[in-house]
Length: 273
Image (cartoon, rainbow, N blue to C red; front, side, top):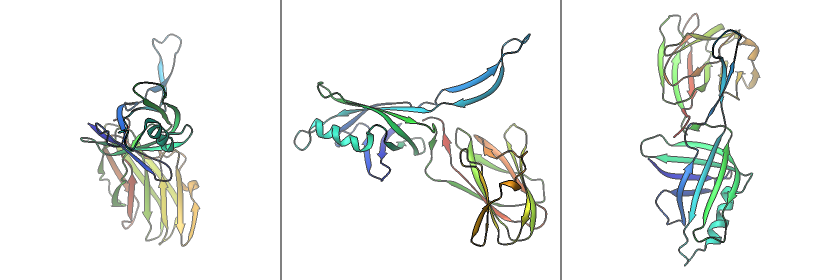
């Protein structure tokens, strides 16, 4: 059950909105837009074939709508003061960052741009209705998960249990401690085919290879000494950029020779509360 919402400005100023608590002058009457957002599904029809053929799908942006009742104590507050105070967090066009706290679900964050702020003055029960557009529709757990491992010449696949409800990209970091020319990341979500990401290059001891498969922030970088350079050209164009799927994900990093340590970082993402 949802018990508290926090809103923060980009400067870090926080507004706490506990549910069923009007001590701060605001009563959370409702929050719409917490369910999974609709999907835009593309399909194609073909002559002499019944139905249509699925092509692709993408999810739309999220529209959060907050309804905040204004409940002043009238000794130190007025309706106008409460209303104007909300402008700090919910002025249209401004970015607003939210944290949702629940009893039976992880704490999650989401950010969006305020679309509208509607709070009529001349009404008996003043309510602020705030619309926020979240262009990234996912809720993110605030603490990243880190998994450590080592490359192997064998075929055994380790298993990572991803607890999010939508796919998530990873940041793979390989701390090279010997000469290396190639390695391969093998990834198999439960019940699906094995996917591979192949890297071929000339690496030496002391190199740090970092590969991000996070959508919108994909890269492959090499740190050698104090110099950071892109090595995107070393990633095979036929590679599948690893993204964990909800549930069990088998993983193996293959490289010939002695084991080389690596870490994988990822964030649990949720499509709805």
